[in-house]
Image 1 (cartoon, each protein chain N blue to C red):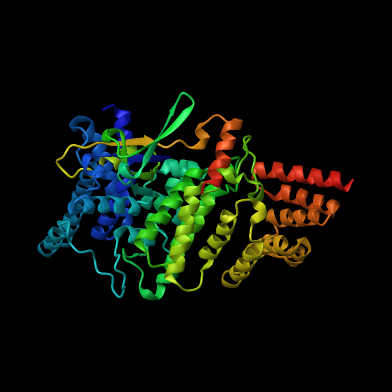
Image 2: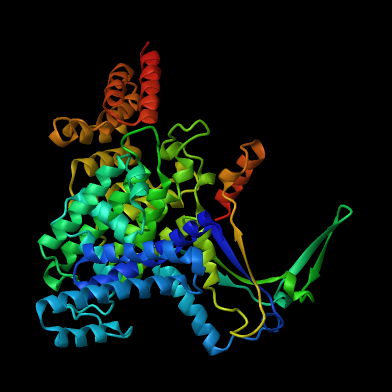
Length: 424
Length: 137
């Protein structure tokens, strides 16, 4: 096998196996940073040995066994230093058996008890900054290589590598245990995991800087992580809510730009380009939320809104009254100026631009939206629909100055010009 | 990128013989594995060709022939649709697919990359396909 082929095979095996390997090792050595480095050592060993010995029949098992041996060496070394070799050796040998039970999670009544789930919780631990959580999740749970993560986030590779090193050190210094959170903090910690996954998705979905309107690889990875989490925590409604939201939003990825790469707004999109398979999966995930009962959380509400659009064969068929009602509910459970702005749009579609403008005007002095391009963008749109073209043009110009996205700026500048023309 | 793992029909699948328990368990385990890895999009088994038909186009005419059909190797009995990051990942997953005839027996699966509409050169015909795709859901 040619060397580049071998590299690609190894990459693929790594993508499939690394989270499980790192999780297993973390349970053994009680430190995800060290676990990740040991797993990387196994990867290096594969690169050295496979070109001579050939790719093993079961490359995943080979990597796991090699990494486990490194971990055992480390544990033996540690126990020798601690001078209590006998007792610990016994523990090590026990752990070496594949069927050895995982470390018990005190007080947690969770039948899943999966290493990958533990890994997700640790990578998204509150001691870490949001940027560090994202980087660590993609690296350890996603199995992505540092240069690929750096490229996706438009960062120098050294910056990202540093961020990962620091994150691992922070976890180690804070002695973050490799455990599932206890019942008291489970909800909050799960929220943190969902937030990181959605952050990754959004980074790909609506690039905030640079010329790329979408970076679909990040969307794909976030969606995959969400699907993984849905199998690990199937009883949590919001996990399915987030998956539903991402599936339906991802279904529109290829409709969001025209042939020239310019952005196309939701209502102007060619619905024939929406991915029906992803819509079907999104609606199925939303059904799982319903089956679990209880009130919708923020992700399920957003998914239900996205589903309203997905169900409408044409933009004109959209059930705006239901969308406005869902935004009302969202404003109750997760109030924010951005939700309020979206509610304004929905209300304007359901009950006319004047009703929407009332809500938007109440947001004009909102400090959180001062640099938010969508506020003048939406206001401009409502003013244009009310025939107040001169004011609309002014708002579009402000929005164009605020946006960081090249293609969005082009679109807004064009609308400013059209409104100015209409104003005469 | 998406790949379809295609299971070919066999005498058993054509006779409507349900797989034995160990094979069913292996298939369930494999698909659970795909789901746990977040790569499974869709999977279905197909009923024997006795419950289907063929439409033949010849000289401007079209005629319907009811199943069953004889050449089982040219027919499919099921498919699994996965979404992965690279062809190598698809290859690695497909290597792990359980022998659809049961371990130790001869069988064949086929793996094909799914066309995304982006793979076609833009043109009026493709736009019509897209519109059709949207309505077919």
